[in-house]
Image (cartoon, rainbow, N blue to C red):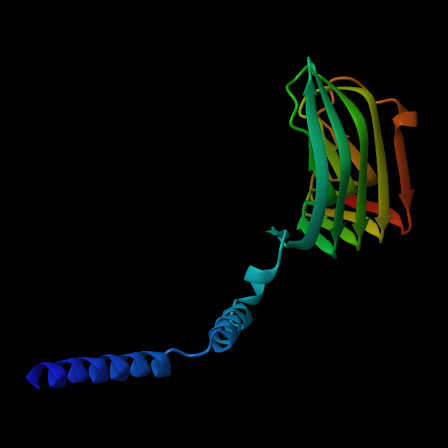
Length: 204
């Protein structure tokens, strides 16, 4: 009799614990919904600047940038293909630039390929004694330009204004190429602007 009571007690306890466990576990759909809601709350509470991708901030300039550049080393040459797109009004002290591309090539290497730079917005530089404004810029870092085709599209006004005593320079261009070891042939540069390009400076 005691054995029967003992076995019956074990069965009742097991059934009770099993029932408690089943009752305590929420449905799987509810767990998934809770997890999704938690992720949505975390995303909503992020700082707006954290959610911005490729946001560049500099000296009095603000622009968003998107780029897709493919580089390949082939012997002593660098092959570059792709584009750089930037958007926003860019203002700078002495210098302001729209779409920019620095080509990572060693001095003396030859650079080949096709690059397109596009900027939507106004580019303005104001300096005391010098100012340079460019809608797009390619820096070759001392490499030689081979069959490198550069296309620039600027949708906005480009202006440089310099004022002060002494020698004053102001330069505004739709596309500038820096750091080239040799002169790039003009036919390799294709620039189309949709706004005014102005430069003004005064000397006292």
